[in-house]
Length: 479
Image (spheres, rainbow, N blue to C red):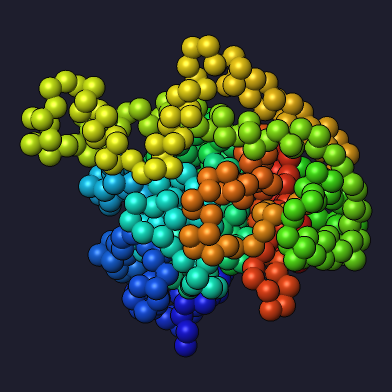
């Protein structure tokens, strides 16, 4: 029996029926990792001792006929910018290569309470800054569908681990498309929740007003199960929301009527330059919903053309602020004693530490972020970007008065070759052109695979109104 290709519900039933044990299941996943990961490099570190301890706890619950949570015994992976107590957390950076987390992130606390099993920490672009997982300080992850191509980023390791059957589900973070883009490139399901619906406590900060922890799975049902386990208020995160106080448009027990659903297609997302194969795949997905009875409505999001510039100004400004703490004294890797002695002043020590231990992309973003926040340029760049961000939010609010959800491509192209864009930052940033608006507006979005026969994977995203994850999940399940 192949134990490494089950859904969460199948694992739950298998454990309850004693078809296999949690320790056997976890052992099967570690065997898969040992066979495959030397080629893929999805994991930065494994937590075998912790995983086997957690699996034995689940087997003990079963043996004693105690209640078994739905996620009990389910093996999962964690992006290495999310804290797991006593486990190394590098954020893909040399500056944190020896850092061990002193506490569990809010989402990890919830999954541990559900008796899920942590297999290890996955690779990412350094501090989540990238679209290909080539910016990791420890080496690039490869796309399991085609090892010559990137898996997307920055949650490339998490997505690759799911697609390679090296875990059942994985946690990622999405600042400007970092869950949805690799899911599109690898053919996975990825949920970027509404800003505030999932705690960010224990997520190493890159751009605090944009990023959100989310879920990567093979099926929409699995994404829903994990999201329901990790969502909700966390006293440690002031931006998290008590979802019970928010009226959900569609209650879980209510059946979605697709024939009464209006799906908006933004004309700005089907532009010149999009890969014809991507456009064909997404339009076929639209056609499927039309055949199911959904009403397809063309809409306009007129400020979309400014979204990429606005996103990079705001995210780089926030990165400049958030990463200021890594100076080798308060946080981050310190200089060796002989290097410290060679520096006669504190500024030189800071510059030496940050220059040696931050990668090229991180240094680039810190410098641009510092520039747009500096005296004389703040109003021209950062303040103006925040004003346009409000216009983008208004665009979505107006659209949701006419439609229930929005359907759009995730990326204008499919997975590119390793090394193809790494030397051209502007070309790399264009990978995010269809995803960043969602983060600027703080909305939920679900990436779904829609590849054509014999082609590379691609994907489309369903974007919903704030806190209406239930709606996009139900619509996603239909196809």
